[in-house]
Image 1 (cartoon, helix red, strand yellow):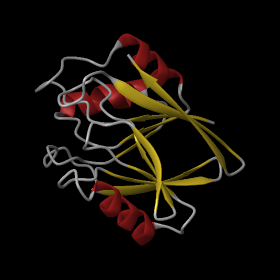
Image 2: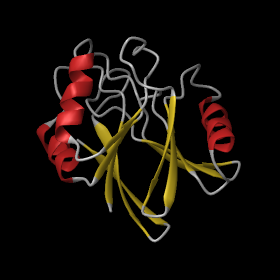
Image 3: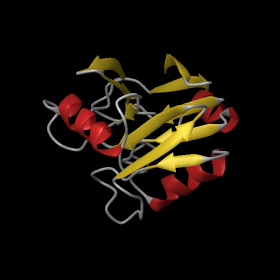
Image 4: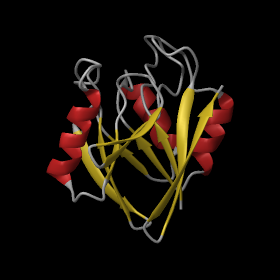
Length: 162
């Protein structure tokens, strides 16, 4: 199963669209995970239109968008806990790891955005993925996203940037 991991669209306040090559990756993915900060209901609708299946959470600028603050999804035998990671950049990994531990077992993968910095780390035994900003919205200096292949409980992650 191919999964597109994206976050921090910030459409329309900071950027106007997702780059075409990233749109293509989103459209061909079996499942899309968006870790919040859509910025508008229109941006959410656009992602829903592109995605075969979508798991999404609200970010700190999405209070009226109607999404949960945290979601858990199992794909190809891998459990993903999705949250935005809202708060100061210092402490991001701790907040996300705590959210993962509260929601699932220790083998779950945390997916969060907020910092606009692409990240793939293991923090206190929890793997944390941050796709960065799919549009390159400030403070990012370029658009980034992650793709993952999940099968029989194994996970392989690739980083993409423009």
